[in-house]
Amino acid sequence: MDYLIGAIDYHDWADVCCWHRSAIKSGFTGKIVMICYEHLEPALLTKLERKGVIVVKARSDNDVNRDRRRDIALFLETCAPDDRIMVADVRDVAFSVNPSVVMDRALKDKRLFIASEGLRYKDQWWNERSLRSLFPHLVDSLLDAEIYCAGVMGGYAGDMREFSLACFAVCKTATGGFGGDQVATNHVIRQPEFHDRVALLSADDALVAHYGAAHNATDAAAAKAARFDWRKRWVVNGAGFPFPIFHQYTRKLSVRSSVLLSFGCFSEFMFGKLVTQLRNRLGFGPKWTPFWKH
Figure 1 (spheres, helix red, strand yellow):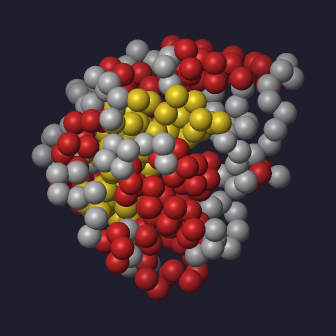
Figure 2 (spheres, one colour; figure 1 turned 135 degrees about the horizontal axis):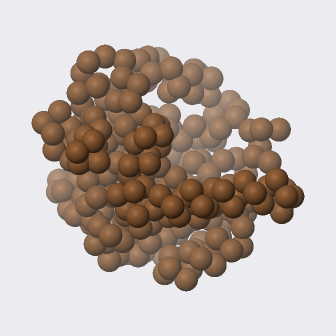
Figure 3 (cartoon, one colour; figure 1 turned 60 degrees about the horizontal axis):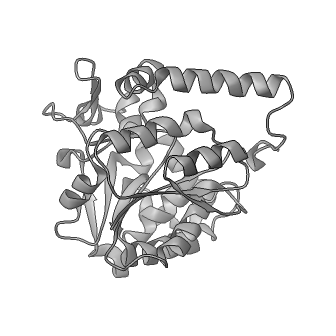
């Protein structure tokens, strides 16, 4: 069985619709699972269930990106070891190719896969800041290392469970703030117990595009690794080949709008955000505040 797993907190349906619809339109017939934390409207959970999504309720004690590692591992205890799992961010990931087909290609020789952002930690301010502020004890080993993005990854359930638990353990060593699952992931993929199990994908593999690095490219090579093709309304690699998975398409308003239009989600997204803003202004919105805004 193939699974597509997401995790959400402080989200609404507008944040989920393109992720869900693009997966279905791509032909994915496996099970879609959503780890749902406590800061969500009950109506959203009901809508997900009506659309056939397996809703797994969980409670967060840090942030969704860190805690999903723990809760994904818990869910994977219910799966067979050789079930295949894709874990993908929800708010800014869309699929043009069936995730099962992507896993066919990414897992030919390995048990896990993850894709590069095409940058090193010292080349990208956000990742470098996360590394230095949250994991100073890992700076020497990762500062010159290539960044592999935790936003999309996959593998066999047994291996993914072990990997998720290892990442969560490293996250708990963070010095404060966000849990730092990106740094934790990059540390764990380089450890002896996982090094030989993980397929490290580059832009040349043209499977997963992390658009953030290309959108704000620091050099010509990064800009050529992934670019948005306006004729195809999708991200392509240097050879013009479309990536099956588009991550971080929300980094540019015009690109986001184009992707949402491609999947028929534009009006649904805009209407959903308008309703959310209106509810908040009238005092009917959620009363919670994300911990990082206190």
